[in-house]
Image (cartoon, rainbow, N blue to C red):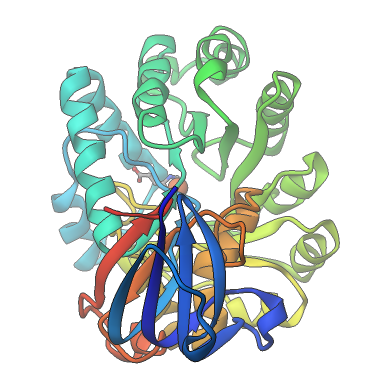
Length: 387
Ligand code: NIG
Ligand code: FE
């Protein structure tokens, strides 16, 4: 194994508590990568020797972003739907069916190429771990196919057969739940780590969601939930009840929902690019943080409710619109995402962690929110290698 010393780092965010502060930030720092993992972090002047060295010339280094929520396996786009929303048409879950039709028509090669394009786009913006959901197939074969394709890009694949009731089951939603918990799960499970359900008016109710999550858990999948996006509802409570890793969206929460998140340890996944693109109120991150809830930020990149692959954009929105501090937003986009995916190997740059990091053409991470929409990520490393 060869080692690489990155030196000349103006600000190094480690999320390593031994370095103190909310982010374990070091100034005038260096980092040593050994093979695929972080071997050492500290002051530049104390850096050990390595096989090779690169001087980053005063740039900042942060842990790679952990994007804990995306829907990348799809065909087509819904730009017209976005344009209509911007002139007043509200977002509804029904738009998912438009993408389902296009996705079923697409070849494996087309779907794979689209995921590859979006993963590349994410990596350019500093994302080093991504969760990818199915949910635009909604047949046994199309869901299994989506997950098989997603697995080529990540181990964090999520079975979302319960995205919406497809048109062919409009008169028989219970029949669709039986499919999702039966033959579709049988075909999906081997390609999936997670099971997810969209609990929302127009999608699935609490009883349906419970049946779907419990069926997935019984097959060894872990649970995550789309919860409380379009209005108050049972999603967050259901996530707490089944021991889900995360409840994502959390836009409309009662005090009891906030308490349930805080006491259960379910991570609240906040997806501000969705509120941006649906012109909806942002979730109240401050309320969650002040209650002691663990918050993750993710893109939810999808062709309908929000088609951004940019974690820096989410950070800027979280800081400007959701009353998160820049430090809280960066933590939630890295360590928070890792917590949401129950990953301990990523989201931080503690010795032994996977060497996933982003180099910023800026003196500190503050510039991610301070300079919104500027492509500050100049280099991304995954498992010690530049990508
Ligand atoms: O996370 N909430 C459900 N799923 C997506 C929307 C998908 C779509 O509109 O195509 C979301 O927002
Ligand atoms: Fe989503």
